[in-house]
Length: 102
Image (cartoon, rainbow, N blue to C red; front, side, top):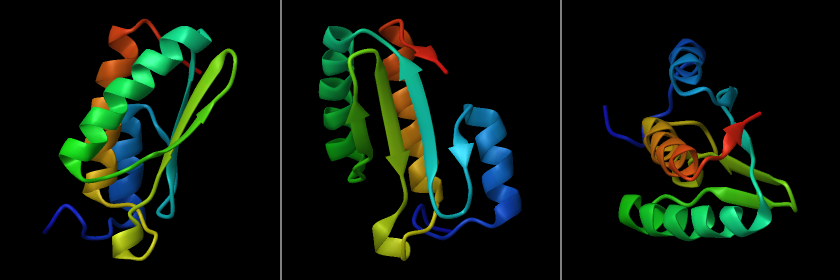
């Protein structure tokens, strides 16, 4: 199975529980409470990771929130292991910067 193989609903549910993200077979999301300036530093690091992983999350920055959303467009807009690999990197980066999952 490649990183871009669509995951079943059961596989997605298992990975959601492991990573703390929310979603379904179409998209996964996670929101963090974080100050705007810190959010910008997180986004810069996530951008570097996204280039390295060749997978780009959607990012929504608010004054006190940072939300990430992902789906694998090249697999037909479904969730794949690549989404979760990227999610794990985002978790590590955000938590290292003190962002609080909400």
